[in-house]
Image 1: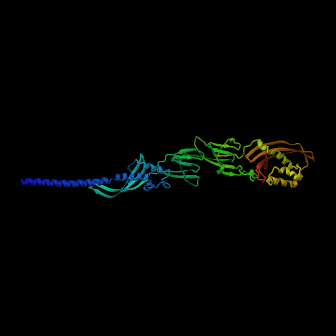
Image 2: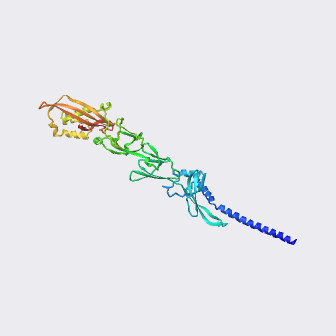
Image 3: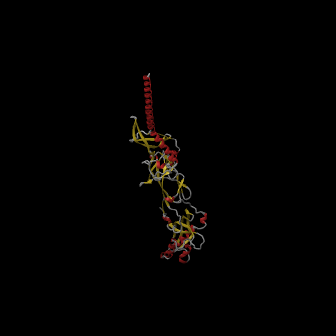
Length: 450
């Protein structure tokens, strides 16, 4: 009996010790497994992504992100190429997965995704390496960096073009060859690159195939009071090279806003199927034919009409002027200084023609004019043509006449033909404080046959 009691007590003690030891072992294993599970890197990844989203919402993401080495320019959170990215992160709903091909000792790399698009690379670092239960290696994982995925667009295009990326106009830097170098970085995928010229034409291009951009240049030389339009857009002459017109030398002294010759350099987009639409309207408001040869077109002659408008003809008789001038040159005017007062009323006092013709009255040559009598009619073959109105205060026209005379000494009939281009301006030559302009002849040039 006593032996049986001792046996049962021994069994009980053994079982008790076994239970205690088993409990201790199970508790230790559970503790180790819990520690191992807590040391899994995914825990740190999920926490890091939560902080990532939180920083995007409270505008501190710039402190959390690591700027990619290949990001061009300043990292501006308000720019069109960064702000949409931050909004995507703030919206949440991000996933992750380990990245293959990335290796660094005691580090792990994960791709962070919005939908199917990777938006960042997360790096975590393992510290305090240790082995548990002879099998399990554990680390204490901590956040190291989040680097956004960057999309770069690098192009060199002619400076005459404007570039918009995903609807945002971008700028670049100029080189020494008339080109602009674009180096654009975006944290969102770049979808559309649209290139535009100054004349309203745009094309969508592939940055990998810039040869699809055709830029054609034209040099067009026309007077400044002609109108030039390219693809329907009228081009102002203000920013192009201008030269003064030599014939206006004596006009320029009295009135401004004179026409000049403008050399337009036009660079515009073209395609294999379509040339730019270039139209030119002359000073009469009529469209002219534009035949561009080797990229150039030049027309410096103004459009003309053969009739002076009635409102101008009522104020100055240009044919009468040339008749008077012709008589003055052969000393057929009466009055002081060979009739200078009769011709000078057509001139602004002290102007070029006024001085020139007054000097003629003092020149001995005027007294050497052969004695003659004027025939009746004195003038024949008179015409006024090639009227050109440059602006409301300035016009020119061609006047031709033939004066008939009979030489006193020989009885010979002499006919003297004059053809002149006359330049006439409307000008107030008084200082009475009243705006009362009149038409004056300021220059006259002989027309020579070519």
